[in-house]
Every structure is written in C-alpha cells, then in structure tokens.
Length: 449
Image (tube, rainbow, N blue to C red; front, side, top):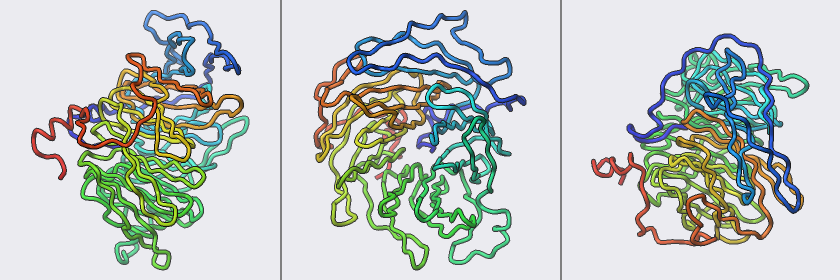
C-alpha cells in the first residue's frame, strides 16, 4: 500500500542492493517472561554492543536490536526488534504461527511467532514487495513488475513453500479481452489486496486507479473496473456478505457489491467525509455490529457503523490522537491498532454495543513512520493478550505483546495522559493537526475537493 504526496517520508526510500545467497538463518531472541494474573514480570535489559546492534550472521540483511528496559507499570512491551541493514519493509502478514515480511528485496522473509526465529524465505524473480496477504496455507504477494504471485506453504519441523502461479497468467495476454475482462496486468504498482474466502476471489487495487477481481482456482481475471479518480491505497472485503471496500488518494471510501450473474461489481455507496487521502481501511465485526475504519493523511481515523437490516454505513465519528498521517490499521475483535507517520502506534478499544472508543495506550518504540501492522489474539484467560507486529521506515521490525485487563483504563502515553477515556462523536469543524506534506498541498491549492 502506497500513499499520497510526493514530499512525504514514504517517498524517501532507496532501492535495496541485491542480497547475497545465504542459507536459512536460525536466531533466538530472548523474550520477556509471561505476564501472570496479578503482576507483570520483565527480564533484565540486554547488554549493549559497541554499535548498539547484535549481528545475526555476516551475510544476513538483518540484525537483532537491543531492547530497552520497559516500565513495570505498563501492560505492554516490545518482545523482539529486528533491524534491516538496507531497504524498507513494506508489508506484514501473519498466518499459521508464522509472520511474513516484504521489502525492497525479492525475498519474502518468514519468521516464527512470537519470538521471530528465522524460518527461511520465499524467493521471487521481482522485488519491491508492496503488499502481502496470507490466508490459511496460501500467500499472495505483489511485486515491482505489477504482477501477483501465489504461494502455498507447509508448517512442520522445517518451512517449505511452493509457487503456484502468477497473476495474470502468461497466456492471458494472448486472450482477446471481453468487456474489459481478462485484461492484462495492472499498469502501475499493485498497492493492496483482499481475499474473499468463500468465493476464492482475490481483489487487487493499484495506482492505475483500477480494481481487479481474480478467480484463484484458474487464475482468471473475472472483472476489472475503474474504482477511483486517484491511487487505490486500501481494499478489503466483508467475509459475511461479500461487500468490497476501497480507499483512495482522492479522499473517498467506496462500497461495491458483486453482481453474481455477470461477475461484475456495482458501486452502492460513496463515503467521503473529508478531502484528505485515505491510506488504510479496517473492518471490525462482532455480534450484530459492524464498523468500518479509515485512516487518512490528516491524522484522523473516521469510522462508520453498518445498519443491521441493509448495507448502508452511517458515519459515527472519528478517533483523534495521531499528529501526522495514519498509514496503517489492524483490528482484532473490538480492538483497533493504528500506525502513523508520527512514529507511534495507538491502541484503541471500542465499547461493545456502542460507538464509544477509548485510547488504551501509545507504543512509541519506532523512530520513523510506522508503515505496516499486523495483529493477532495470543491468549484469553484472566487477561486478553495480543501480538502486534509493526514495521517502520526506520528499517526496524518489532513485535509487541499487549495485555488488556477487563474493565480497566490504560491511558498511558509517555508524554501525557489521555484527556478522556472515550472518543465520542465530534464535529469536524475542529481543526486537526495535518501532516507537513498535506499542509503543503493545501497551501498549493492541490488538495481534493
């Protein structure tokens, strides 16, 4: 997923040098002790080396970073931190006890949850892996050549993977297009993907402003349509009803429904509450409630609630806290995780059965914009545990363990306490803090109407 703005920090990325051949790495990261039901215990700090890093192997593009000693009053801490020597990490995906990371390299690195032991890599013929999507034992990845690779993997004593194919198929370019379908590959960077499990459909969004639907079973493009007036930055699908959501630099979020008799898609609703580019989308469904979240370049996270008896989404308000652009979102149940250009990750909790949200805590271990996030439920006993994986343009990949006590307020920002435990519906007349790139665009008069 790429973002709007020529002068943002996201475009200050250098091309990575090719990695030398290497054997699978096996590293062990010392983790903190598990939290007990009453107290939180932490391991002692790691000794620091002369350069502040722990090299894993001479030829490895990764090093293990020392972890700071966490405060004993906090219910979260960083349990692993890896630093990449060159290039940026663009994408993270988690499945089957594994975490996958994509970067400038043509290799998709595979790490074991949660201690980040290196399990190997998947090698492609093209680099700059901008998006990764994992479902069960399948993995999808987008590359610099504007193509999508499909992989399968097995998890046992050793990690094994196999490339199933490429989208579009090599022969598809020879097929005469019909009504815009069976068209060739995207004409620009493929920034995002979503997979509809029950139908086996893979949706891809691109900077060419189009969305394509691929049937994975025969690798055929069943639909291709112009979705937005600018880059498509985010895409997701509701697994319950098949609704497709797209977010763009044109500042809009659109909802599409599939016409099953024609394998086409029709626009049902456009959500445009602000002119700021939309960088990320996330869906949170529980019981009879379904919420859509969008992160934008003005630092806001807007959310909409779905009406129970129809497909309409009503604007419920926005979450305010990030100082600069929101670049990524992840949800687990009623928990929302947001990564920002301001280098922080905010953890939000939605109250069941209402639109009230509270800021639980702020993770501020990165020194650059947080580019991508992945989150999963770790345990559920007396306390609920989450593992959050984050990658930043400071070239680090971190793993966070977060414990949420029931009915407890956990507003613990390093700089200041949260003013209110709940984020209520607010008027948009309040002036948000805008990212520098967006302020410049507003001054130039090039922002979207």
